[in-house]
Image (cartoon, rainbow over all chains, first blue to last red; front, side, top):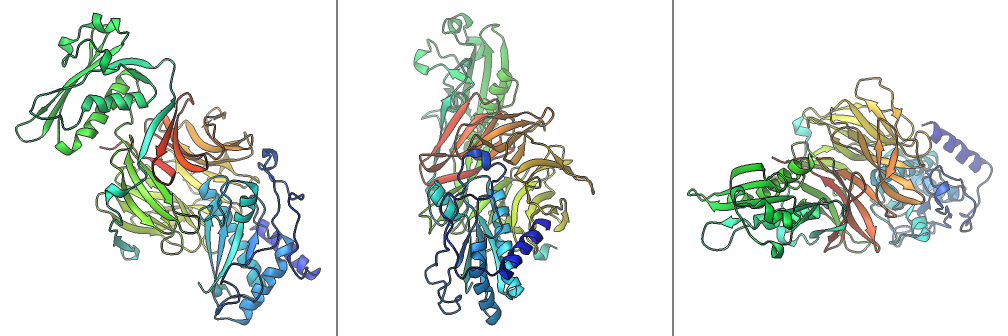
Length: 176
Length: 432
């Protein structure tokens, strides 16, 4: 869990340093951390912009904070939460802290590359990273269920970078 | 103990005839030095049509394997039915090395009898001579067993024609998918749906006796591992812990199962589940991902995928308490999902090869890695029980299909599915 503690520290530091009010958009193809394996493969590591809002999920009865997106996107083979999602997670965490009866499912996903069970593990790690970040903001353990779907439930079909970017994600699903 | 098992009978949601992913195996690339053989149509002693064309089944099996070149029936100048009737000189002229002849008869008790003989054209010697009684519904299986015996006599390795393949079929649009776990004979015949669900089904694994399948299903809303007996359809939930329950792999004696659990803390490690007692023991403990366990045939060691060095690589660990994992693969930046060959000397893995995910063979003694497939997104290798072939999932024109490559990489077959997407093939053990 050593890598996770580091991640938490980075995250907390970011919060103290004052996070951006809204998730900022990282331009496509911008420089992100190179990954062993992926780096030499010629596969782009293009980042994804703002989390989109799922229809009917947020703002509905038993839903999340109004007007806040509920998808967090990740870099290839990574489970650390990018700084631009600090505000999004903080708003969900505070919302959950204030409404103790509300329950959510934290659903982890990957893109289709690589082996399926490894992707299940990777998506679990993403979901756990988000779960812990939400708990750090006051959400209760009993309010959160994590489930990892790996690459089994892509958000969009296709085998290109733009599809992969949208599929490497954690979705916060209210009322489940 | 047993009370904790959630037992339920699965009513097949679809009649067998509607499995709708019918597989057809086609040879893509065979061996230049494939063995020329004549499979002479078998004699049939009773009235009416032969219930199963034994010779045609053997012909198709051997041809599909890529290792044989069966002589077309039209080129046969005679059709003997016993070794004593085979004129070696005639077959030599046709450049055939072996001749298989035989006869199918009906027994007084309603069963059948298959009698077959394999003759070497070079020596004129009879290499095989077998008589077997067969139930009416087992004639096809018996034909595949003849293919197994001929393959073994000529190539020195038992054939794997009388085996089965389990796989996952997926159809429907991205947002509304249907998942089915399907079992088929190795030639694509007799397929039927074992389990179906609107939620993902993953990671089918055969029990060593070939009678049950373990798999991951999300039909409860969360991942759990189930074991389903094929003869009755009885489904037993064997692992439904908090977090992920994945990558089931049976021990060679079938009494234990290695699996990947994340428990409450989300740290994915390998655990050993004793099926009779439901007792779970942790095998690996590392902050990194440890998953995709596979037992060695002697049951003493487990290979698995771990990203403890940064990116996924293959490791091995003994089953004794306190044994430390050792890294097995060093070539390439991504090696995952090991499967162990029957002799324990090779692994089939997914490797990242110049930007493409491909199937590779790893020599565990010498450490070399050899890429066998040539797709872009190849995954889920599963080794035939004779070690000669590896079935895997690949992508063709945007569609998930299955393919087979020989373990030396020389023979390639693609398996066309008539229905939706097919993936995660698992080759059965030898079946009795």
